[in-house]
Image (cartoon, rainbow, N blue to C red; front, side, top):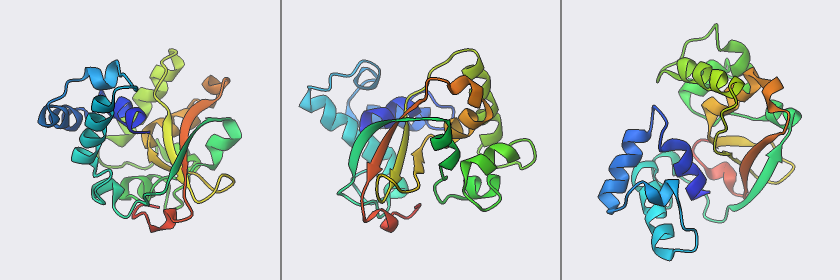
Length: 190
């Protein structure tokens, strides 16, 4: 999950500066994200430190405020119906885009009608265009209280919305990392 999170944000328009600064502060370079050695305890520790530094992972801060420690992570493949059921994290931009429902489907329907902050609309449209040209993205990171529960986006809000805008480009399914914890309701953004 940590590696996928960093891979998703290392080149993102919104977070790349934060990732680069955290890498420098940790004494690491981009290669621990772009060409990782998952068998290296040193690299794994550095990646954890980097994600903690700018996103609060493992520190009960920022995005990971009140995030449970017992989340179990799994690789999953989402089909079109799964994508239609996704829910945004509880965050003003995504609440506004979805008209308060927090459903990613509503966000996708509102992309041309509701303007949000942080350049989200333009980022979503850019991702949708890139999907049509065949670009592949890192997996979405999602959480729920149980495998059959509603999945909430932790990382990948813009990508999830773009996937719904270009649902026909998603024939093979969409890779995601899903985490489950009965205590996920404690998470500040759930």
